[in-house]
Length: 333
Image 1 (cartoon, rainbow, N blue to C red):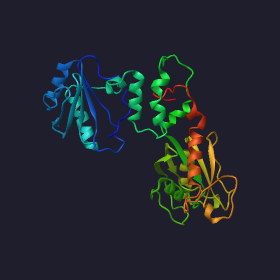
Image 2 (tube, one colour):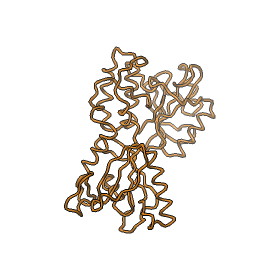
Image 3 (cartoon, rainbow, N blue to C red):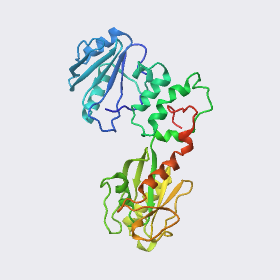
Image 4 (cartoon, one colour):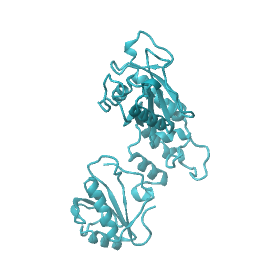
């Protein structure tokens, strides 16, 4: 079960609904919250959904709007959660059914609506952020925020931790860029610990980019393995289009991996300006020694841990993680 960033709930009159699960994240169950202005309004809402009466504190198994059978939990007189299956068709159908039955869809939900057990708005925001499956390194920092914000006004406080910490909750984009057939896809597979990208000793094997979500030294990132950039005389039209797409993606990245063959460390490609880059030497197991870059080997695993740490530090420096000031984590930078 997963939760998306829900942010002011239903109107103060009538009834409303909001989805507390992300449709883009695989999950077994979805969570739809429904709220009413008072106890009677929520009773009527559950009746309109065909659920029937559910007492405060009860969890029952019911047919929901004739679409799916799932759990219904009523937490308070004015708040209940529906737990249907998380299939796309079920979620879309239930969303339509809620709206057709007169409930107002709330795009933004106050976190205190989601976590009424929280003692403060900061604690509610922490619980909301933890529910979004952040990077592992974010967990302790988030749990520490209630104490850090105690006695401070979040709307006025200016002495706060650096915004680089936001990448712990909003994954940065890392793009690998380099010549064709030097092992970029093997590197992606090694970092993912699975066969995510097609690998072959044939130039141009990767014709399109492959997107992955990776956890590197406790930091979750979006990783793109791009087609190789061939030398001018080697590029056929299809390869050239793939290279153009790779360079376009790299220009929008938060970090570029400037990938090169360890046996030819000076044979790189022109990188887009203004984007931080790490030089990564691939196939390090094929040479006796290599310098001027992070040396890795997808075949032996050598250097992969160092690379993961280097990527994390480039995106979220050690100093940011150690900063003792409060973190305004609920706002995008």
